[in-house]
Image 1: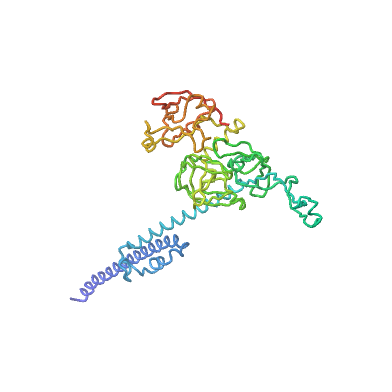
Image 2: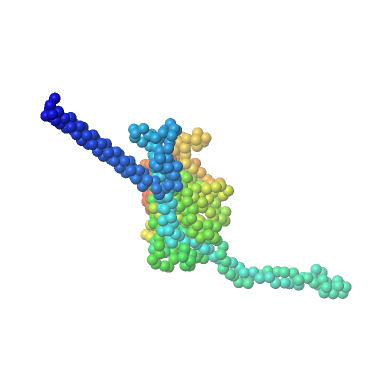
Amino acid sequence: MNKKDKIFASKPEEVETLSGAKESILTNKKLTILVVVILLANLALSGVVVGVGINTYGQWGPWFEKNIMGKESSVDGNNNADDGGGQDNGSQQNLSALLEDRNTETQVIDEQGQVERVVERANPAVVSIIVTKDIPKMEQYYENYDPFGNNEFFRQFFGDSFDFQVPQYRQNGTEKQEIGGGSGFIVRADGLIVTNKHVVSDESAAYTVLTNDGQKYEATVLARDPVNDIALLKINKDGLPVVKLGDSDSLKVGQTVIAIGNALGEYRNTVSKGVVSGLKRDITAGGAIGQAEQLSGVIQTDAAINPGNSGGPLLNLKGEAIGVNVAIVQGSQNIAFSLPINDVRKVIDSVEKYGKILRPWIGVRYVMVNKELKDKNQLPVDYGVLVVRGETNTDLAVVPGSPADKAGIVENDIVLEIDGKKLEGDYTLSKAIANYNVGDKLKVKIYHKGEEKTLEITLEERK
């Protein structure tokens, strides 16, 4: 090969070498770009996870160090990093679990914030009620007492040495004393207050309302419900904060509730939290002076309620009153009851419309009939209400002169239907009557002495 050929021959080799070098450089650049992209993607992913987790490192610390910073552990427990196939299943599961825990924690914190906001809004409208009464003021004085009855025979021997000073007591006027207390809450800005009837049952007592800011107002009892343990008070003040009324019919068991009241008559606006433990309970509540009252359809809660809380609101997480705290089970833990606010709403409407509480009344005592009662007493039906007397001789089955008495209902009759609707389950006679007004005429089907018959009864006002 001549020189020219050599030169000619060397050019293709050089060109081939240069071409290979260029391709190699391009390949390396592509690899470099790919590596950079992967690194940026990993950094972006790490940034997202770090951004989510950095504020809760106290809870996420161990996982954060091993899986984000160094990947020291893998699914099989060896100190081998991921083989490049993507994030391992263990890390994904850990992340899912931690995010779920984070959501739960967020819900708990959010509920706590809701409770705080509810208390902050409702507290100014929750009041303490102080009951005072003129109590006889007694004074002590002394009288001389002669054991010998002023007998001259004994006096000539003993003289006056056997005279005694005997203490005696007599009334010296009266003085006002605090004899009780309870709670209530303002439902109208002009000073209308809801409480329990048993808190303000003494007609000879005086009632003072103490607001959460320490102001005192003399209160007038507008109405005492003859059927339910509800009463309305009025104070002369405008522009007051109020508690909004909710819907007790929408309550669900397990729902969070808050109770506020004057615990033990001493700890003003005490707050407790619990849940709705049960709905539509029927209880017999005993008063402080031995009176017993049947309460139907009440709300059961485990929120701590103490004597003195009576009349205070039971609130939902919207800050609405859904009940009026009314009773506790003595000797138990976390069993308390509240009157549904929808029943209270009817009382308020009646007072605003008529100036008093108008309750329609039929005038019988009864028990609900069910299959067990039917079988036990060999009754002809397993629904309706059986008209029976109470526990004492004075608790008559049918009140003399009542609408039921005038219509001819007697003891042991079974009231089957009111205006064509059966009385069964939760639909009691009391609930049926509550849907009507004083003066309404009802078609009442009863079972009387072996046969069914329909009566017309005109509802009257409960006195």
